[in-house]
Image (cartoon, rainbow, N blue to C red; front, side, top):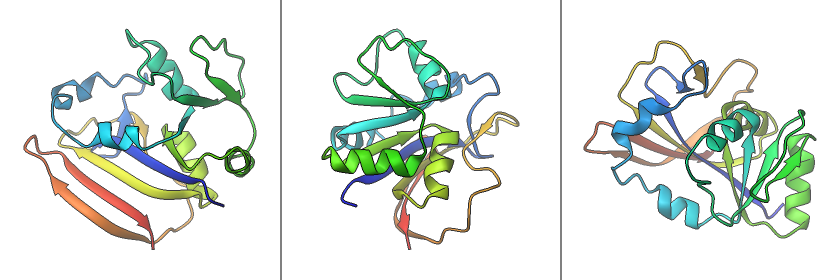
Length: 171
């Protein structure tokens, strides 16, 4: 399979990507810092996002994905307003479809979605920005049910804000 799937995500030090209600306002103090997201985003053909992430993004003042192709993985009905596509099948079928359609690098976003792609061993690159904050509760990035997956560290960066960025590929 030529298509590659990449994750670029922030997590609290205790492993949460959002508060229990899905809010991510706790990330605001870290938004002005250069984390490399712009370059990462410029290098992807498409995004595959989970329903929770999609609902969070719909609450933003502006659609953050521009003209990039966005596929929302959901089993519930939705009314796309920015050209996004809906998908309700398994990750491997979506990966095969994107590969046939010529996608080369796809950004995965959303905890449940990322875990589904990890279970299928479809994640080719994982960049985790660890934010120096304990949320105490919320939506986890990782949870039980993911098989053991050895990783190889490509890069570790400490940013002035205290964010630590770790970039891995499967070993």
